[in-house]
Image (cartoon, rainbow, N blue to C red):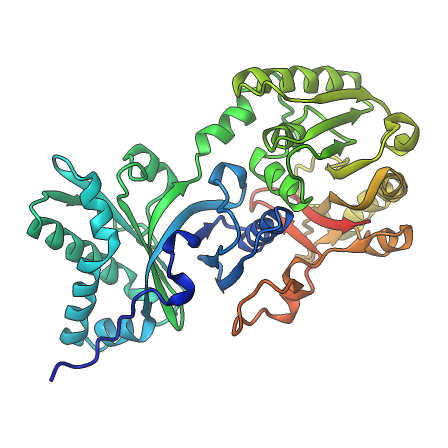
Amino acid sequence: MRSLILIINVPKMYADTQLAHVFIPGKNWKLSLAELITFLEARNGIFKVNAISREFFVMDLQGAEAPRIEDLGGAIKIGTLSKIIPTESLRKAFLENNKETKAQIEEELAASNVVSGMLDKASGKYLFGVSIYCTAEKLRPISNKIHRFVGSSIKRELARRGVRSEFMGFSRDREQPQLTHVEVIKKKLIENKAEVLLCIGNEQTWLAVTTAVHDPFEFQKRDVGKPNQRKIFAIPPRLAKIMVNLSACTPRKVLLDPFCGVGTILQEALLAKAKVIGLDINPWCVKAASENLEWLKQEYSLVDAEYRILQGDALNLTRRIGTEVDCIVTEPDLGPALLDVPTTPYAQKIIEKLTPLYFGFLEEAFNVLRRDGRLVIVTPYLKTRSGKPVTMRIEEKAVEVGFRNVYTFQREVFAEGIVVKEEMRDMGSFVDVAERHKTGREIHVFQK
């Protein structure tokens, strides 16, 4: 009698696999998850988060339209679910070297719509790749072994069906067997349904096909290809897009950036089809932002783009703007450019000097926001020689003014059984800082 096959087909909740998706986040995975949840909620989507980790998220998007990857700043890849595999099967196959279980896994891979999708696109010598994202600690050290097995199994099945194929390998210095987004783009794996994602959790493993991948070349164009750049503390377009999404900005909403600089945040809001207003006290910035938005309008054929850039003081918003806005997304002054990591006393002096600007702005922002409108604001996050960062605590002032803190991970969007740690549930801000930088960003989300 044949033993029980441990691999299971997609359960009822995933009966339409087009509605179940895997998301591969960037390095700041909590920020990426907050962006994704807010993006879907803002569009009244019905969805459940079925798995979270720093390596991947799994979401059931029943009743929610899957986001386009170009609408997100924090997602690297999006995949459509094909099968769910008990992770115990992988442990038995690769830690215990159980040959029968390996044969069963190979049989299920061969019968999956991963292979059938490849057959639809295969012509000539077909190139495909496999990326492993693993949170199960005991399996992580043998990810390369699992990678070779999955790739070889698919290659044998393609050969059995008359398709010659080539399975992409990796250099030995690669930490994990994962294709980069650049590799996926250059090898045209999306068009050919040719990247397989194996996302290994502690209890379940998800098999998916990559359907979209982050295009760094588009973000690079909007960063260094626009007419005017700001070299010091230039906010990256990817982070600007994340912040726009955290503000729950949707098409036709009015978004304001009162410290707009050269307009990076405004660019991403325009691409989200918002109506945008920029304000800056510096006349050069007003001119630079206007030129950049006109360039964006032409470059991306934004025929209906609506924007205006004004010169003025962010501490006098009520009189200068003259209207209520739906969202405010902004990065005020972060202090001086630091050549060296500062001492704690010097970092504290920087914060003290900037505090009146931020506190005064909070009151003005509250006045011009519509009810339930959101404020997404960056404050400086200063590394110090002591190793303990110095930050600006603006939450108490924001509440005093009338704002509410937004705690994204307290939402009822997590499936039963998903444990969200208390420190994550209590997160009202997100830190984003590069290792080489002395000044980082703390991103706060408030609601009126």
